[in-house]
Length: 382
Image (cartoon, rainbow, N blue to C red):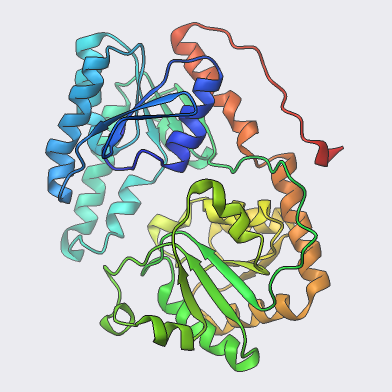
């Protein structure tokens, strides 16, 4: 159940729902959508999309609860903090287990929202964390995305599972075709705390050294929090600076777009919401065999250092980012070695197949069902 995410959300639909359906569960996803549909055995039941944030958090959440209640499910899985109060109602009125998928640090996320006035950001972040933990204490269980987050929730609820948001294990070998020269890619939404200002400045510096360098952003720009001069940049101005926004594509096509580039880039800025996250885009770059340039954030740094798959630079230095990108573009042998290291890490340990069984087993503990272990083949490891 989600009131925030669309029906084709990568983690919710393509990973969790599909994994449960493949394991034999009868899965229905309740989400804001224009119509009902079925995807890979998952029934998507649509609720009307909200027209504003306040409507989504109130009427929208109630609509999702109402549809979920009518389904009379054996287990309810919530994906948004705003559904937590309705989760308590569901658990009390149906007697069925309700679990909460805490895939974001809610209090940190609130404190960094551009639309939240700074004067109330701190108190609101504290209050949202208190509400989240208070309700999670009373639910049947919690799903988290990393051990750090799991530790926070185990203080209030011992029934916690870690289901990392890893990409699927690559099933095809890396392409023999060389990536396009001087191409860098950033996947996902771009905005203030994602490093838009740094990206624009770093590309100017990179193009002074490599005039044909270009950064493709496979995602949308979010204007809240951006200086007016950046928010107002047009297509021609961006292209002159080596920055191009690509049209969004279906989830299944992202990997092929990544593979045509030479370097994967993570420009995230240091702020509470970014400190402990594991960006899916970083793992997707690694799965595609790309070397990476990343900001020096704690978990990101640990992943890149452990895999030896890229360069780590100060989060607030456009010059350092530009120099790191230039280094990888000018040293293709080192870039290939780092890209191969990253892909190996995904193949061997950081893939969705290693997490899928953890989710299914967690469900089985509540529904008292045993699922045979499946060991998917991955010939590239042979």
